[in-house]
Amino acid sequence: MDIRKELEKRILVIDGAMGTMIQRHKPTEETYRGERFKDWPMDVKNNSDILNLTQPQIIEGIHKQYLEAGADIIETNTFAGTVIAQEDFKLEEYVYEINVEGAKIARRAADEFTAKDPSKPRFVAGAIGPLNRTLSLSPDVNNPGYRAVTWDQVVKAYYEQVQGLADGGVDLFLIETIFDTLNAKAAIFAIKKYYLDTGKPELPIMISGTITDASGRTLSGQTLEAFYISVMHAKPLSIGLNCALGAKEMRPHIEELSQIANCYVSAYPNAGLPNAMGEYDEEPSQTGHFLEDWAKEGWVNIVGGCCGTTPDHIKHIADYVSTIEPRKLPVVETALV
Image 1 (cartoon, rainbow, N blue to C red):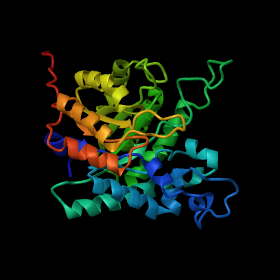
Image 2 (image 1 turned 60 degrees about the vertical axis):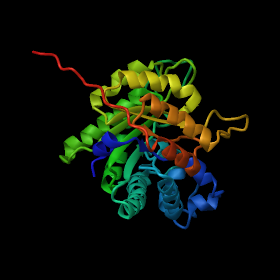
Image 3 (image 1 turned 90 degrees about the vertical axis):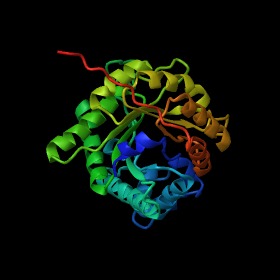
């Protein structure tokens, strides 16, 4: 299966929020622990990634709901699948297994739906999150030169994640929710290093940044164009935006990105902005119409949902964009030598 061939034909749909769907199960501390970690010496509640090992049926069920709703690409449940993120729970030694199993769970679900309809292949994206530490910013306001982590530590952490996702059978990597481009560059470096070390054929890379507020910049201070330029050396399959903003607020940034990107463009916004309780109120039809508008403008190739979105949101998005032509890749002129 070649995802590029599908992207030439139609707009692809990526799934919605994993965390939102997990919370629908009202998981308890015991749910997260399962039998395997029932005697773990500290709380593991809200560590969604550990559910790959303790409650794989929940994660596979969520994947299948998104596939049933029309998702072409499902993300592995590995957003925090690094030793740096898992250090909070003292679960660093399980990181490789978390990623392998996360990939295998998604792979089973995707293959099942592809077998049902081979004309609509489903793809698994290995989700690589931004980390809970940043290479560009100091966590100490009194010491701006301090960093809580080093480049080598971040590369090593991502390398282990990449290895696990590749061994588990993903089709591509998705470096997402990027608020610090230097962290993203470390993830790119880890992917490239993995393939240099192993000699295996490289999988495509999707890159998705996050504009954190009305300034139109990432948390580490880059404009959208600067972010794009700084990661294009990876030759990604797609560049895009997700999280932080709802579709209404994300619109001008997607328009800008569609005009400067020489690769495919992805967009998966939140279900609006969070309310006073931190919950998302945007109805599936509203989100669907926003993304339908972007598709009609010729701005996008891959669409879906982030925080607060559900299979209902994905179904509306998939239905609304199903007959719209995908954004055409620009013709890149090469200079004569």
